[in-house]
Length: 437
Image (cartoon, rainbow, N blue to C red; front, side, top):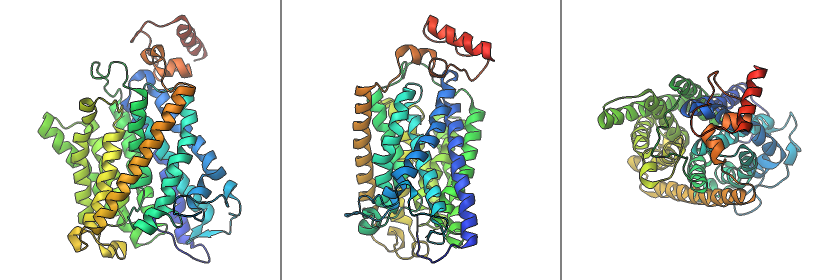
């Protein structure tokens, strides 16, 4: 993500970034539908709520201090910004960041922080306490997302300005942090009841496909908007995003056909998302040919990676690790192979005469961000679990979080009669919901 120094805002750039910001915000409701369709009927609303509440929680944290810490002047060492702009102090309507109003830039960055937190929820679907999630999201945003964003995009951030690793739109702060955090929470909470024994198929594949479509639509704002202007770089990132999503979809379906004999709608949706994940860090560094290869590699590799949970016995409910962590690593590393000077303005990948240097920088960034994120998230998850409990009770999990936590059901038939016997308190909640309908 590139920033520039300018004396005034450009109206064309501002108009484009306003649209891009709205597109990225739409991605979180799209993610809610994508995840909501993948869970069972008894926890659909809880899944939707985990995404929607992230919008509110992250927004408050970001406006209070998150933006200032991520994008404020570096306090030393390239690790974190200062609190000069806490509460958005000093950022009036005439303040400019590059060629756009600073308030718009801050809002655009906010939408990235929102969806990153929401992405993590897919790894612990069906079994996390909603109250624990309300505590986790703001603290995690400050401890993980904000520092990594500063490293990659902030003034003086060490990954961008000392290591010289490239990340155009968020492979490190968004994809790798969400995937590594998902893995950490999987280990803290443990597997769902019936993991590897019971069928846990998506309950609504049309809903999954709709969510994937909204994600793809919003991703154009995510990637092309990261050019921070209505310019040729935005156009290149836009086209690369489309191309990688397509080859990601095809790569996943090819693997499914060869391995299982059936190309599936879930595979198509997941493959498109895998390709989009991988092109996120590289869309401003690679040519169209590179984008096609990045998407294809991610679609194929992620289709295999999602099955690792069964071999390694970690229950990544909705494949956050297999798609976002693996896809983010693929896209970030392949910058070191396919980066072109015409796109980057200087750095070149292995295939274009740059040698192994850029690939090495990308690898260091991946390892450090993944290790930091995993360690901090695991410690935070353990602390929350010890203080208030992070996992829902066995009864709540059997009956479903929709009814036991939110006193609602997504569908008229509800979830009663599925799973464990229902307690009188749950029956009372169900009757209350029905009487209000």
